[in-house]
Length: 290
Image 1 (cartoon, rainbow, N blue to C red):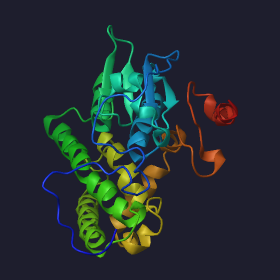
Image 2: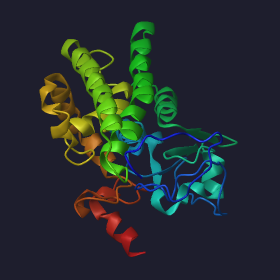
Image 3: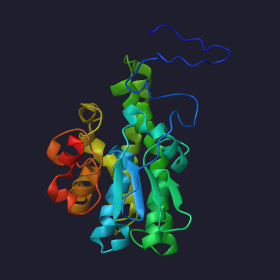
Image 4: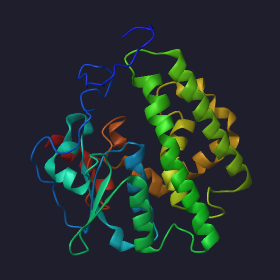
């Protein structure tokens, strides 16, 4: 790759050797690459995921529901190693034809209900348990405004800025500057909203915060993309910083961030989660030893 101008061909063809951290798992076709059934645990809710920001949304949601006393939100969380291509198994594709984590199967229904796309999972669980979603028309709509804002905005942060800043085989000024500008605009949108409201949907914590926090709270905390927090001057967004810290201190958020985590300090990792006691018995060590 060079800095020379690129002239697109008349017909694009797939170059498997195009480089980048995730080149080995990116492909222009859908469907399974191998046959493998998904494991099934003892709870009605079966989650297949990894602790990326999108994966954290769902485990945080489930832990928050359990903290609120919704025992029906007990779940089994199975690790999907996307670097190994687990998301392309026949079993996973049956639950999510898009081959992206997270994917949820609700076996309390007959036949079981598959739920994919993290925003859809949050909304499904909020409606199923009647929690973390305002009930007034105005409140519900404001909550969904920010939920869908996140779904539309995060690709510019992750696949845009994050890719070109941290993962691309070479760094190019134009895409980094273009997406840095957009991410800073998004942070300003959040900062202005959080300057007038405690939480994104209003005075109450909701699925809007759960959706946005792993991405933008992660950025504000310096957890995403190396030194990007300094590069983007995230400390200047004081309202986002206040919100980020408050949510990060919630016990359910701390637990949710651990589930399906395979990087960082081993004490923060819970590779699989099948019971609330797993947080205390260090199931991650048992799983790693298998």
